[in-house]
Length: 215
Image (cartoon, rainbow, N blue to C red; front, side, top):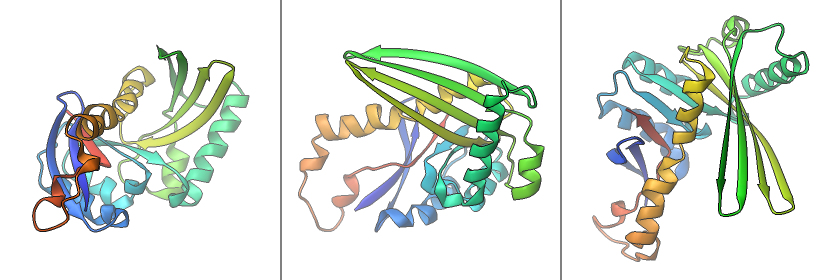
């Protein structure tokens, strides 16, 4: 049983859940979950599977904002964003309006540096793709250092927010609270993964989330 949960990151509280048969059905479950909640004024962050026009429109219609992870499932949108970001970075962002924020974390011998760049001047992108409520694009460049090993990764997000990087960056970071404050607790404290119940009402106790509003 796969369960999609809405998790309030700052309150560390599950606000709603919808059970689905398999992961691909999250696209159907997320709108149903959004309909269950009053999210006006919240910022909803969702992984790439939930990066869908209908989901973005529903969030906007409910007077909330979104930050959606952008990967290859949106075709040319991802390609256009990456090409634009790389070109502008090479030019020192002189042809666009951006805000930037750098954050450094260290734990268990690992140092992680994350550079957030929010592109605010994206009228051309909205004209080409007509994405509901689109107001900005976020580039996150991360460097993880552990002993002699260095890993680099660049991720992209689309957002309806007009806020600067110093605001958007921590929200993207809060996205991972679902792993530390919900999944880890379920697995390690309640031993969720060890549960072998397979009938009737017990399976939905298991929680695996892909969406959560930041209230």
